[in-house]
Length: 106
Image 1 (cartoon, rainbow, N blue to C red):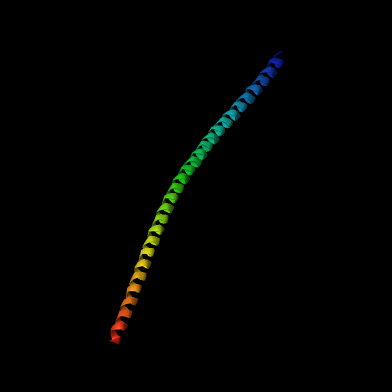
Image 2 (cartoon, one colour; image 1 turned 120 degrees about the vertical axis):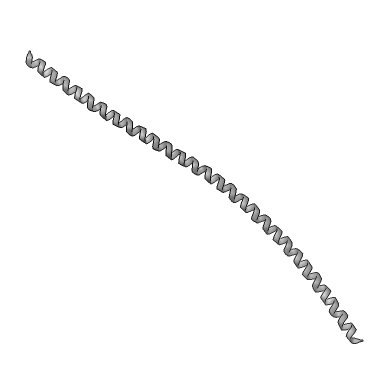
């Protein structure tokens, strides 16, 4: 009977050791799960931050593009004005040369 009790106690101790080991392993898994969840949350936040930054960059690029397009249009308008002025002055110079030639004949 004493041997049986000793054997039963030994078996109970083994089961308790197994339970303690299993509990420790479960706690390790829980810690790892929490750490992975935190890393996942951090990665998710980084992706969101990146998307927000990308939106701001896109808006900034659109704004810059519109500014450049306006500057180009303004420069093209100024160029047309200069061309018209040049044509007018060239025409006036031709008129003056003809007048000078006419006066030289007299």
